[in-house]
Length: 274
Ligand code: BTN
Image 1 (cartoon, rainbow, N blue to C red):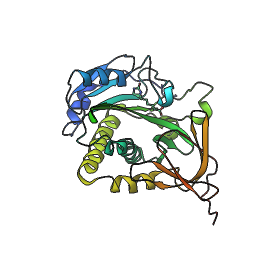
Image 2 (tube, protein in one colour; image 1 turned 120 degrees about the vertical axis):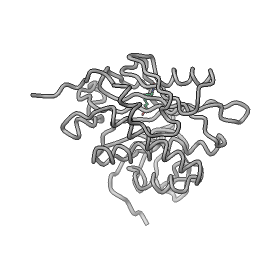
Image 3 (cartoon, protein in one colour; image 1 turned 90 degrees about the vertical axis):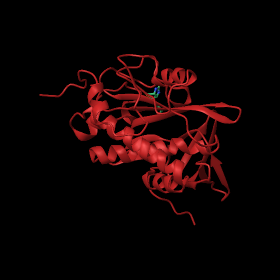
């Protein structure tokens, strides 16, 4: 018999009992349905909620993706959560946080499922060539200081049917594993890994994150096209710069750094043009 894509809903007690973190998820706000966990975490941030407050929901009616896109958020099947962070860093150093989150989630998912999760710049989560997760970070800065930051994560855990337009590029953990995945222990594992990686970054700076990101990256060493609105830049992704930007080497040998945008990978093999 085939297993359904939905379960009875997240058991929040189970999550709280097994979570071993200092601050992430200690305050856990649960919605059966909400517009967007990023919106809710941001409201809490404005009201002064604690660092690490986490909003989790079964379903989003206005799930937000990067670049103004929609994040498809069906009920009782996937993970949608946002963590309110008050990082002890400058806004400049916080440009690494999306990469820290990418490393934590790729490592956490690979560790928990045995699948090989990779990161496509800036922080799409892939298995093979297909995307199963994404990260949306929204930073609220006041007088050149971070008031708060919202780290939103969407993961396709047990959904197996996708809208036609994304079906060729989308996957889920269930599709890749061939069986459903319990959402509670997965969430606990990911919140713990996120706290660990963030702590390492706050204490030791970006060097380790950069090395881990490059190791887990599906982008470095490849020919890519980065689209930024109407503009597109082609080049070989060769490294990360000191602020977590992607360094591209263009055909004429000049280098340029990309700080945001969408990456399309042209070649899957590592090219050596020299
Ligand atoms: C992307 O476009 O790749 C980023 C997707 C981020 C989606 C998550 S789901 C939980 C949180 N709430 C939102 O509205 N978006 C993020």
